[in-house]
Amino acid sequence: MPNAIQIPPLVELVRDNGFIDQAQAEELVRAHLENGKPYKTLILDLGILSEEDLLTLMAGSQGTDVVDLSGMVFDDTLKNLIPVASIRLHTIVPVEVERDHATFATADLVEADVIDELTFLLSREIRFVFAPESVIKAAIDENFPATEASDALIEDLSDLEGVDASTDEKGIESAAASAPVIRFVNLVLYQAITDRASDIHIEPFEKDFKIRYRVDGALYEMNPPPLSMALPIISRIKVLSGLNIAERRVPQDGRIALTVAGRQVDLRVSCLPTVHGESVVLRVLDRSAVSLDLENIGLPEDIYDGITLDIEKPNGIFIVTGPTGSGKTTTLYSCLRAINKVDVKILTAEEPVEYDIEGLVQVPINPQQGNTFAKVLRAFLRQDPDIIMVGEIRDLETAEIAVQAALTGHFVFSTLHTNDAAGAVTRLVDMNVAPYLISSTLQAVLAQRLVRTCCQNCKTFYDPDDEAIRRLGLVRADIGNRQFAYGKGCKICNATGYKGRKGVFEYLRMSNPIREMINAREPTLVIREKARELGMRTMREDAIRNVLDGYTTVDEVLRYT
Image (cartoon, rainbow, N blue to C red; front, side, top):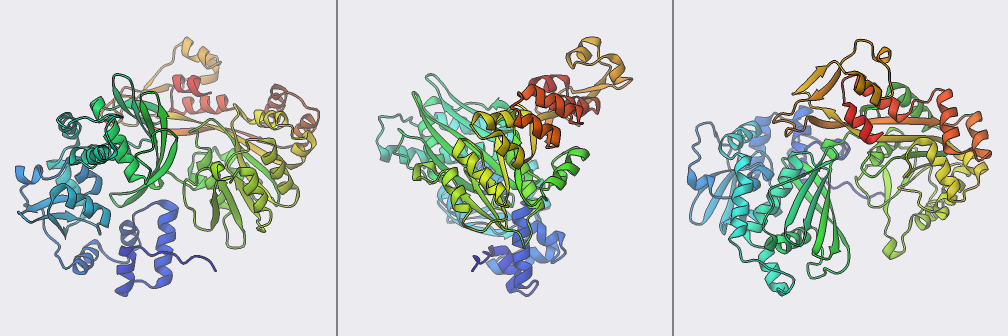
């Protein structure tokens, strides 16, 4: 019997008051899991309740009121009540502070862990009233500017007594649980999510402590805290992710689940021992920032048409290649969602599972426990699947099982780390997979990269000189009178000139000439040139097309293709 869908408190409240039935409640959960939209937004978008009625319903369930913040004056007592990072992270504003309690305005039901955090920070009973989200956000922007947060919190940290590896566990726990450390970690997480960072790097060195965000593929450093705070800050993150703070000699992996402005954000945490302490990297998995619709991930029309045909085939292997962080997982999920139907059983083996997708049976890989890709894939064949996704083909054993699955009537999705589409064939041959098995099972290979796109706010067009054209391998006749684009740099793009990323692709579809070349063990270069003869556009050519269309710059093309 399938697991019952867990109904969250807000949807449960709307259901129990007769505005929706159980089936509609479950549909809201599925919609949330698919697109990452907050439940409140889904309820309003579908017209189930107006914002006024929903606020009244939530306030009634909490025994409180809907308030008007329009004439509210936020004096210093309120402004200094809790740190700006916490206000912005949880989208709340303080409206009253008394000796024994503090009252905040919110636009949504507040989770228990947020109440616990506020209770700890303020040593007061926490109460809530409700107000429209737009009004709360306007009050936050006017009275609690984010620009003041970082310097103030780092100053608070500087006043704390530092700890080091010689400090006992109790002392480290106490430092990690101190209000300035909690506030600073909240700021780091809030800043990363609002800046659309894909990763947060927290790194102690011999003489300093660095915190960096990866935004659109590039690393940016924030104002660093004191080195003496490295251990408390890292310990606080380990507490949030359920890791052992006393263990600093072996790698650890954990997960943090956050709700930011009604959005569910998962943070995948990796701790690595180094000579100067633990290096921590947090991968930010924000469903609302990622489209898992195949038609919305930026595929050129011809490649989109080819993929939609190929993934509907009854058997075979479909491979996505590219370096780490190139969007391979997003593409695979999008393909799986496109063919995810009630009459199709889909099994996935992932290390780790990045997004929970309704209708997919997802299995996490854990080599430490003996749960390898090969072992799980072998077990999959006894589970009567139609489609299998294996996170990565890393060795001959996994490759052979994937081929066997394809030969026995299954469609297999996977990834490889190669420089281009044709390189996937050579990589499989290097693993000692028989060429005739590759040629008979492989259906297509998609190679991809992500290039930064010009900021739309400060994008400027210019006439390229001969040197810029030459660097792309073109001549002036190739571009005609088209102009190139670049970003001057502005506040919106943090003076980088770039905002967001776009995929560039190379799609190799199997054909009889290509299969014959695979059987003949032809090298990558020969296969690539034959594929180009047959109509394949290389990643460099696809990237150049994006330059000519004004999406990205010459430097980005040369950097990534």
